[in-house]
Image (cartoon, rainbow, N blue to C red; front, side, top):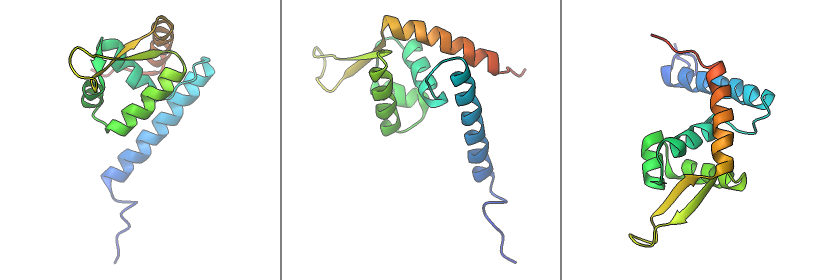
Length: 122
């Protein structure tokens, strides 16, 4: 008997559940007029909660790869929600990321939408 790894794999089940949740959050954000994915929201939250964070701090906080962070930051930057500044005093490669005023306002709206859909367990 051959076991189908797609039916009996906890990692695959977790991935499927994660995708379902991402679709649910995307639809909720869209309904609220917020053009953002849950991954982008998490990145925006990490920037909001870690003032002057560098990219390394962000990907360590989010526990994802550098490419995901870089692509996400590019999207957030196109929306003018964040800005990147090179910290020349330390190292030209050390880019600091901060919320813009527009990003701060957007983050508060997105946080409220996220909170309205998220339940907290005890």
